[in-house]
Image (cartoon, rainbow, N blue to C red; front, side, top):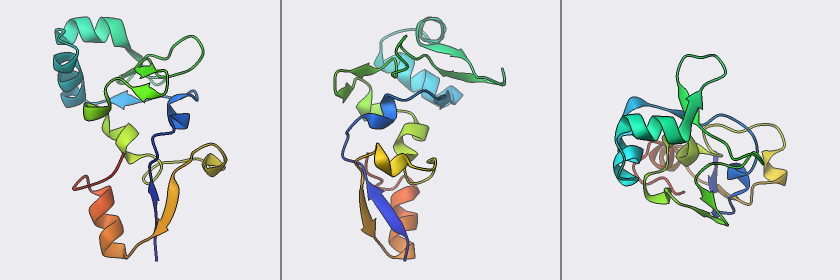
Length: 122
């Protein structure tokens, strides 16, 4: 049986370095949410990915996500899919030591439903 991790919004994943890659649709949604043009959003909140083949969210100087405010995500309602997918569809060895997501054993069908975006938590 698969294990599904229920996000507890601990924001640990928002505090370590990495790349949150953005699709064109995500850029459009985030820009509208911030009441900016896409150009303005890109200039203020993104950078080239390491491979220079797309855009990723900027990090604060301390490595935190640009949208982390205290213990809250300022774009929680429309956060990027990569953020929604953690820790179920991407993770790294030892993530459980930092992430407070609760492991839950679910059926294969339930895991697929939760990770398809049709009701995924997070």
